[in-house]
Image 1: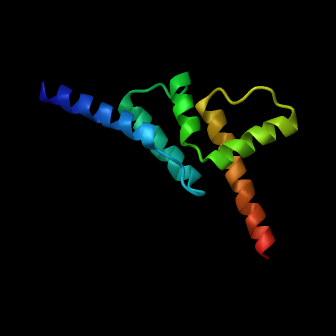
Image 2: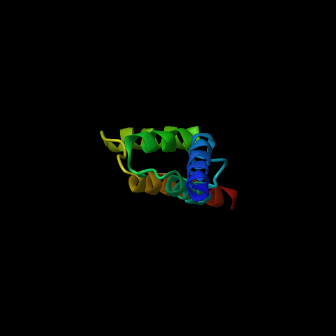
Length: 106
């Protein structure tokens, strides 16, 4: 009984943390690592539409805007529909921004 209570509490705590998790600055990889851990603790399917919605809300708004801009510019009509595709696109945008900043500062 005690174990069930602890597991339920861990799951509920993870769910609440997921709802509040936000990407800050350029900490993309750390954000995704924590997101994955919390999804596991919450018992969520990482590709469920509800989880992908939580993911979008947690990604820095500027990055989401750049992502949609890139889709529009590339003529891509479908937004990512899996966790891995969201993660890949966001990491690519963050990496490109880092490269751009490094080049511009030299």
